[in-house]
Length: 353
Image (cartoon, rainbow, N blue to C red; front, side, top):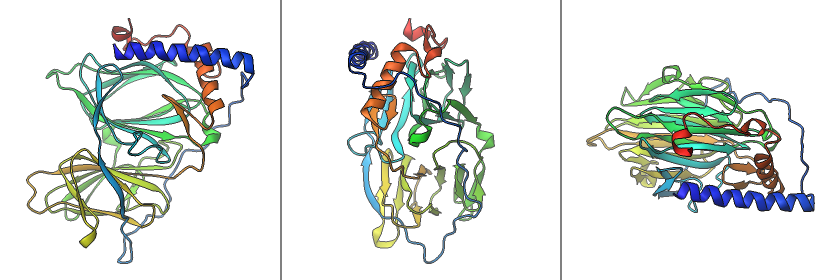
């Protein structure tokens, strides 16, 4: 019921804003589409760890509290909460758990990129442009919403009835790219390079960026972001260089880990997000030698965008007028939302009616 109640409220708000726009001429009804820009490519030279490398200090660490989202889904949201809002370029991080019968039926986006990393289960996606597909464990989807897209993300029923689990990260787009054409890039688990470090005690999946001499697949997203999936076995130690000046955090999926070195070490437990200071060269993480299970975490870094963020739900722009425009365009099926008129996803129909 919460989903349908929120839908009605959103419809009323859109109608009110549409009326405001009509009588005050706050915005223009059309705007040009910018030329496509090149995707981010990691530098050709690798960042190295030396004796002079300075570990990044922890700015804050906090638990991602579980909450309801979508239609029957449960998420642990860390970025995009009062604890950490608009940590540029990051807008939101959800650790989601979606059981069969729940999900994220038809909904719009504008102005951001979303990165979905499936850890367990299988999830179908479909959009108003006819794109569709399925993510399986270890797969990722990089979606650029750009000027506008409407899509659905729904879990497949699993034989054992277990929920679909994964991460979804929202990344802001540079202002000049917020009206680019939407696009998808599915990254399959078998495409992701891995590297073993610390004599095999740790394994790193280089989803995006660089680690220990290994480069990720290219042309994944516009905004420069590094994503590393790290498995630490008992007694493992990993020192990961990160680009200078980038914002960075680490989220613990399973187990626990020590961040920092010597007297500056801090132990971080499962479901906690660790936010690092910008100063420093590397992130150092390790596990106890007597740990009884492996630890799994992600290290994510991105270049800060020097721009204002004005967000209303799935619309992320740089001004209130931009948000009003997005709401108006979505309601009137214009400026990127033309194909939303009379469109309903097949995978979302059981929930949308």
